[in-house]
Amino acid sequence: MMSPDHLLASVSRETRLRLEVYVSLLKKWNRTINLVSTTSIKDVWNRHVVDSAQLLEIADVTVKSWADMGSGGGLPGLVVAILAADRLPNLKISLIEADQRKCAFLLTVKQALALEVTIVPERIETCLPMNCDVISARALAPLDRLLSYSAIHLKKDGKSLFLKGRSYRSEIDEAQKNWNFVLTTHPSATDANSVVLEISKISHV
Image 1 (cartoon, rainbow, N blue to C red):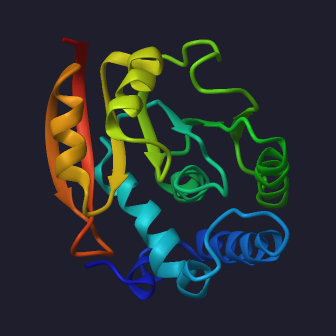
Image 2 (spheres, rainbow, N blue to C red):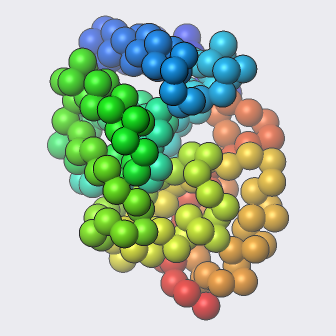
């Protein structure tokens, strides 16, 4: 499993500083806005930063566009953007978030870190199709609904990356009633009971 120390040792000094500023802002804003749970904030580096960072390890290095659905506190979207600033500087990242207070947080981090991200303050199902190479989501909705969102915003040959907990098998079974898709399951870098679902070739049954 990846540790916070391993992650920080593998990135540039500038990226490390950006991650530290992000974590500081997340803790500050979380006192007044429910961005992450109060229990998980105590282990923010492992539970949130490293958990989000693993998606960039799974994504293809040739991706050009990425949309994070229901970004909330910037997880995984802002963490991906911070890491991609060094690794994939041409990657265009959009953060879709309907909650205006959470959008204010995303904008604050964007400005503080001079990140090249686009904040989309709309509902996922009503904003214009993003046509992205990668769609990501974390703690947003059951897989069946995530696939309906992906069908709107994903390129034909793109992939979706969803962080899921121990109930992922039942979510897959339920989603297969309505959707055809190609699935690869990756062990989580932070939790033995969690996974990253890599999904492509999504079509309605």
